[in-house]
Length: 333
Image: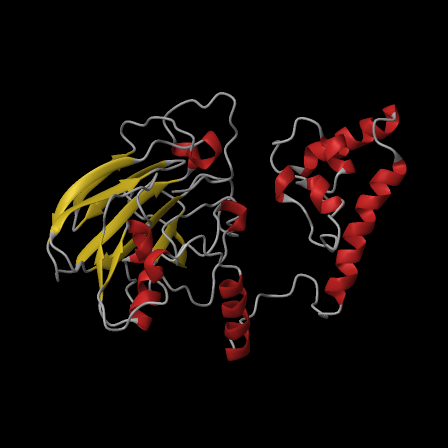
């Protein structure tokens, strides 16, 4: 792929993106050939400089090849300068009808239809449409990790189908997720916002005179504290309690789960449902520093509001050794 981006085929324009993620977190065994073929950026940065310096000294990488990579970065900077954005400026909203129309057009034009047997599309307004599968309920609008971002609006496939046809019925089908979907799709904060309230403590909440350090609105129930900063907190040992309410529309036996880099327990209306603190098993979550996904079940009644609370201790509270893995800041849940 880097070769095709560097040397496009006939009648194609060269790729002008900053090609980064192909060369991320040590996925390449040799950075010099990859430097010839296009990537302008590499992670982790700490390892790149030493490797490139040695490659230049040995002749494995030539100066003009490295200059080519720098030129691409400088070209990108020049194109970005026309936006007149100040450095380190605070994030601002640009949720305008023009922005929405542009994003919708880009999303629509990126869709590739592989087949349309029996003319299923466009939807027939005079027929009932069956929507089957767990992914229809969730707006999977981006990747995870470094690719995660908060959109202005996210519409699930089921919501989009309901907007076009009145006769649409949904069934869960066969769940195919590796981890259970985020709980924040269902929860609301004390003020009625989607997501969770999270209280951050300097000490374990069970201690008398526990000191509160922060109150945060958490839009997603995946909380990774690698970049969290607080002037009251020194080091990575502290505690947090995400909490919220949810009101199900179906009576059923529900599954709840937690995977954590740290320790965590989940309770519903005061009853402990998931314990991922007393006995922990290491897994590949959180870059190999976290636990398996511990699960619990509870019979939930439709129309009844439930209060969910998670008692979370950060990464230093984890109960097992992790040879070969480094913790990422305060961990996460």
